[in-house]
Image (cartoon, rainbow over all chains, first blue to last red; front, side):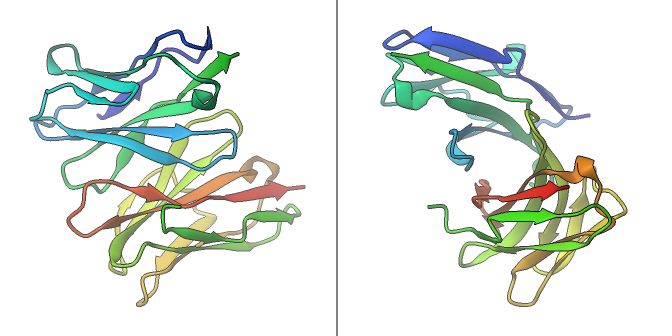
Length: 114
Length: 112
């Protein structure tokens, strides 16, 4: 069965600190997709990144970076030099190859204090 | 703005009532997904439609139903509402061969 675990329920950091949000997934599929979404206090869900199971290259986008390791079934998200605007709930998600279902983790609430 | 629209934004109703939530996908997107997010909970997948046909079901109650119309908009019907149905309901859409879901702003339902 597919499952996504975000063990960190809530993290608090001070502005400019680096923070890593963990995501561990379970699947028996060889082809799958992983996603990160951001849910700011306003409530909408914002797409951040998509990664397929055949692409283990890490990715950097500005202050955001993602570390995908199939060997440990993890897809971790790091924010460098965090800012107050990064305060949100972050969700990791897994999709089957046919995209019929998406499985979301329970989310990690990030509080960035000034 | 994701391009996915949901109406209404807020809905307050009483137990036992029935409501309909509406979703318009991004232009050209054929798939529509519905999710429920209860207070301090993650997203629970409810159901997916692709070009008018049901493709996958998740943890959707029998009191809930959905459909996708020929113009590709979708409606989620919630009946015999209970207090526990109070939640944020999200719709997401995905293009036919795309890999990413894009979410609407959600409908916040409060059952009193």
